[in-house]
Length: 302
Image (cartoon, rainbow, N blue to C red):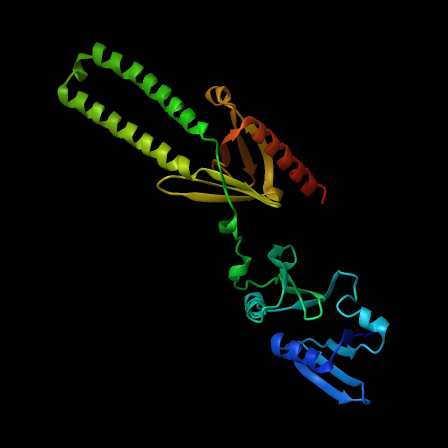
């Protein structure tokens, strides 16, 4: 058996207006325009390419047919237009001010956006995922730069200073007795070198806290979570929920005093990378963990 879907009828209110839209704005080819009577024409348009399915532009001939214009599927997506270059055709939609119902997104089957034709019919513009190693358009790059990141709690800076202060106090508690008990290291050049190193260390820590704290931020999205950190070298991590293997809540003694906690994520590819969102309110961290765990469970049952 060999069957082919040849044509799909789409109800329009005027032949010429429809032809102009589909050929001039969507760049379809006009395959046929045959006059059948004073009021009826046989009009066929088809997307450019190797496909064989065409659109039959059928002018409404009754009130019932008129009521179906733009809503032949009850509000669902009506037609699916595949493309070999999503960026090109999406930009064409924008250039012709065609209404975009859903912005481009990456799905399991490819890159897709939803738009309306001049009658209100919903279309999917899709670039299917190919098994070949084709170039990726800029629309397939996650648009994390557009996300409004939330800063961590201001009190987390105090926690950082306190933790480092405790570290340096412990360091001094070890170094000072060594200089008192060991005469061989009681030389001015050694003493001044150690003092210089410690001062440089302290200055670096202060810069790390002041600059790095400003960059600590995070955002929760429908399918992933992202966070930003770093001072000299800044990094933004985007973690899809379907890649998370483990999620835990971490709270140190100083952080607990200020009601703070962290979320630590583990993925198959994380290895020794610190994937942690620090400086969150205890309540926020607990809610975030519960949300992520729900997402993980949902993906496990798919």
